[in-house]
Length: 270
Image 1: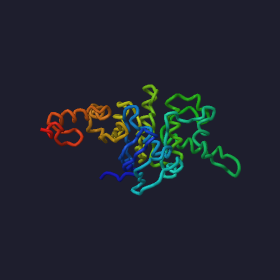
Image 2: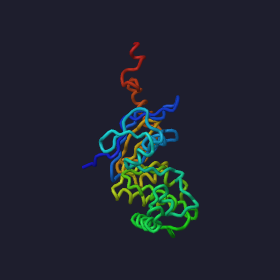
Image 3: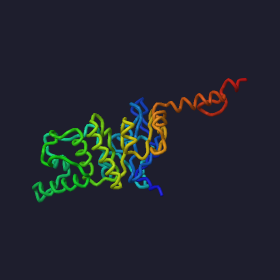
Image 4: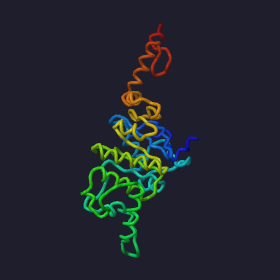
């Protein structure tokens, strides 16, 4: 039985001045599943995740959390619901160690003093649970590799025990070994029952870990495809609009208007 969506978007739209960034987007995100969000540059991926994260609230449409409509107007609203976002820039403090980065803004105090012992213990437990291998939790983040920095950023997002984790291009600019490390972590998040939204341009990464692929094209949802039964060519066609062109050509050969499915105007005039 398919799990009920923990997060759902119903007809979400967003405009920036004269630019319509999103138009009537529907999307369902389920627990224990990885949903890849793909699309060409300018397709609306960043706007969509920022609408979910409360950075750019949607103009129209409804966001549902566990079947109930909710208002996500600020990042704090999303965090309180249980939505964590790891952006491409990671937002780590290079001069601080791993423990300080994991608990940045959520420090544990004993009275008026930081409880360094408890924070270090929780850091080690979390990293061990996720099978994250780093030399020490007390070394500055600046000394870590790109892959290690990425998994630390993801681990930090889990401190608040979210139910939905959004990863924005987590393997961009990483080598083969570091990419494998990040993808392994994505699979472990799914195994923990979390819902993961993975934004990526890399189709190999998408096919390696995603359960389904949602394609955005020109601000619209151009299809949601199960990875196991969908070819890469079909997904790429949805991204580029090649499939739309094929439909248009086929309808044109049948003498039908590609927009309405009815007869074209020349036939009407005859």
